[in-house]
Figure 1 (cartoon, rainbow over the protein chains, first blue to last red):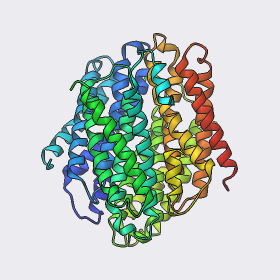
Figure 2: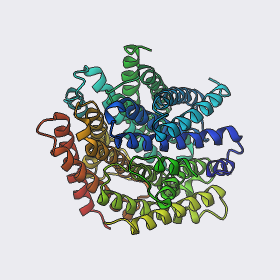
Figure 3: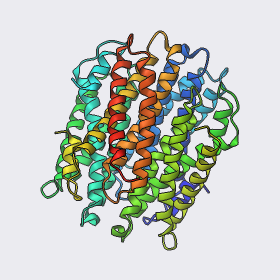
Length: 133
Length: 133
Length: 133
Length: 133
């Protein structure tokens, strides 16, 4: 069981289900992968061809950490805020994944980062579907 | 002229208009006000009545910094990502402002924070309207 | 193998050793635990006794994410910056752990958070020892 | 009077002096300038010569936002944590300023960013000197 899941179970508001823990973990994992991929791209010889990738990695990092934080907070939640933030995260992850996938065949860091983005996109999409707008 | 505006003018992609600079400044100003308001609420005797305010301050901080960063980046922008992020920021600022306004008559920090949230909400709303979806 | 470790191995600068991957993972895990613990404390009946804990959780979150990001970047590293940041992270994790440990016997979220802080403190201490000042 | 200064005056712990407000504002201004400079560098034709600058901009952003947050919080402060964080911020700002100054003569965004870094370095140095270790 992940630390995120243990923390959710220990929260005074009570249990919350595995989907939320999975989504929180996916957000922070994607965030770390994006910081790492942006930096790996910066270190590549052909950095000039990776500008869009670096930029989307940075946006995706920012939005994934925010989403992970918003979801980690269970006290006095605001359903509309959570729903809109999940949508922003889905869009950011999808854009970053699509860009990374275009480089995945010759850059392993883009391949791994695209995986993390797709996992986060799927988790946020699923959670948004079960969240009242 | 603010540092944000000077940085935009110095960007290799060229000039961008005062609305963008205003929105970026409003995002970071709101973020700082939210960190400060959450902490001021924590220091109040009646902290038990300010839980929702602290929580929304924290969410609003996260989303405002992300939005300020996304907007500060002008290289290879993704219109859909920017638009969705602006919408998330509008929702977060509106929710935080509404909560702070409920405490504004007896807590000056909530009054100032509500002002910063409304300024950011307005700037993001205006920018979202002029951004292709 | 964690995503952080896979990303490090895929970085163009080459391999980096398991200590770095462990430290990066510990930083983000601690950051998430701190966001979660601050919010769990906010939801407790005796929130008035947990003000210092919430405040240190917030500081520790900020510093752990920054440290995780700085360490994730391997292109053109600045040894002095990394060393000083690791020291700041050690101090933040130690302070937050000590506070959480004081509540650990009757609040599970503080117990788990203290564990994450101590793991991060240890990983940063070890890495700082092997990093030239 | 800046929003940061007004928020400090409205804090329940009472007045705090202009140095703190100046340092908080300098931290967030430097953070924004760093995000903007990293992106402007990414958009330059000679991006390959700006890798170190982009990397330091990113580190400096992370550390400046963390420092701005830590300083904005006045409830239950931890003097050692604040002092160590200020030192980390001084080191990050100095490194980023030195790099940006090397490009300042032909890139206006680096010139403005270096100014913001030096202002933040000076404010953090001064505040660290007046803070008990």
